Image 1 (cartoon, helix red, strand yellow):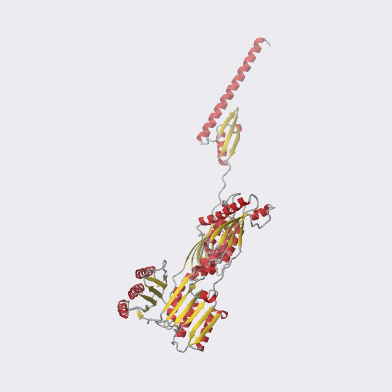
Image 2 (spheres, rainbow, N blue to C red):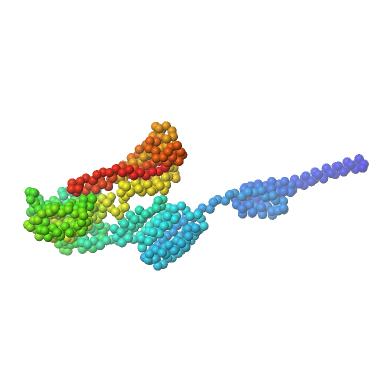
Length: 631
């Protein structure tokens, strides 16, 4: 080949290569511009484009798979899809939150409606069959839905508790979630209401918050009774009844204008009022009692007995009684008594009965004859138990004819108390004692007003003690520790390593202990802190004291009254396991609740002579302990 031809060939090749590079560069530039424009128009600014020759490389993280597909399709419309290299990723999808499972149980008699959402694996059909098997259930309306999510912690225990409550409450609405049961129901009576509330509170599972709204219809009060005593400027109700809140407020205002009342006077609202002018009549009689200077006032339906003080002047008595006869509503019948001043010379006939906290009854004094003694003894044994009655009386045929009636009425009233005493004299009966029933004073007043001879003079002093109230389910000192023990067995109180801070996972355990501690605020308990033997002894003692203090502070933060609680650090001095192993050291790191005294025995002092008769109850010290392992 000639030199000219060779030169021409090389020049042509160079021009061809240069043209190819220019063409490829133009294609890359145009492709990148077109793809970027498409991505910008579509709002996909997260995507990156890299054109290498004919290949269009897509990079970036798409928010979801659908968006990635839309980007690839959009780019495929501006360049040949075969040129596209998809190197895009997809962001991890957010976890779908499980729904809140909840059930509404609506019961009216023998029918139940179920509404809500439950976990699919909880067994909808099995749950419905459980409801259908409840006693007296004839129809169950199932409007439940299910969702395929894990059953939440606590759901099974909450549902089981709600189902049991539904069985006991024929007219109720129960709302259930995994951590809360809300119960709205109607009870038969105030006593039934307290029983239901106590049963529900006792059976509620740990970790489930119980919300109750139990209502009770107004009771029928028969006889409709009010008893008020005025001693100087101090007034008190032994019994109070009203037909409405307006009537109750009017009675309490009238009493407050006459004398100083206790801090929280109560007045039962019920049916059976003998007159719509009940509150008006009570207010008028109270003003008359004030003018007399004191005494007692007893309403039994429309009958009023007013007993003045034996120091009241006869002229004042006659004037006040005359004014009351003229101003009281016509339906009321007034009988006023001005007692003779009693001179105690040691010969005044008496009958006394003392009912001890241990349940024994001792009767002393005078009875008319052996026949009456037999009757009184048989009645007492029937009321108090044949093995617990001691009768030591003597015959006195000079006693008044109504003496046996007063004695039997006094014993019947005494049997309504947990402990107390009754004193019977010729013109007077006195009952004192303690009861675990809030309405005991009202009940005793109604009993004596109905059983004693007309216009009898009697005095009542009955103190309510919530520790004796079975409807409140207040635990005994031993039960306090036993219940705390069961809580700690289910979930331990745990501290951060080498710290006095209680871990978040132990908060529910402390919450449950606080609920029990609020019911045990009269029980002396010690919170003891313990450690293993690792570290210096003095440091272990300080750490154990601080941890015990931390538990005490945690209870205070939950509004627990802690005057009955003490915190003490024992360090490593009281091991319960071998410190040579990790398991043993873990067991030794613990909190212990120890029962120190029996507060219930100390709380039974009712101010009567019961202790003089039976001897003081000895205070015992228990060694029951509730243990919680610590990390």
